[in-house]
Image (cartoon, helix red, strand yellow):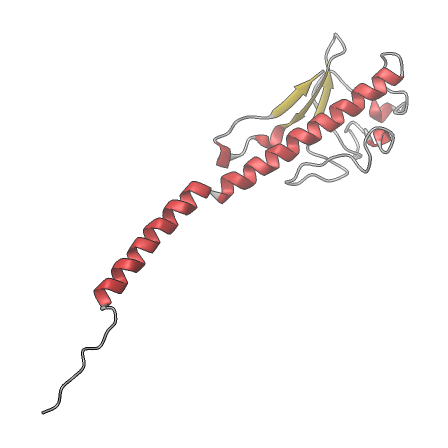
Length: 154
């Protein structure tokens, strides 16, 4: 008479249950991390930093020139209008490349999605009281629930 040893191992049902539990846990982790939201927040942090950099450079130039912007930037293309206008070197845009390297170390900051040297995708305006506003209008990303543009005024 032959005796069969009972083999040890997992049944198919046990393996399927473990795979199901791992799948549920993985989906919870992916939802909690939400990579699209994380990347959108990172881009908005970069935009906030860039807007602050441009606004600080304008402020430094204004302070160096006794309250008047345009000491280094004395060309017609660098005059900041009262209406919000894109910053860039293309025709019709406000050219603030003259702030580099005196006030901005390397180059004008550009929007992480679609910004170029000819159109940074940032806007600038000055109001009647001489307060400058720099905005990042592309901060309105769907992954963040449309928070609106990032604007700083000084």
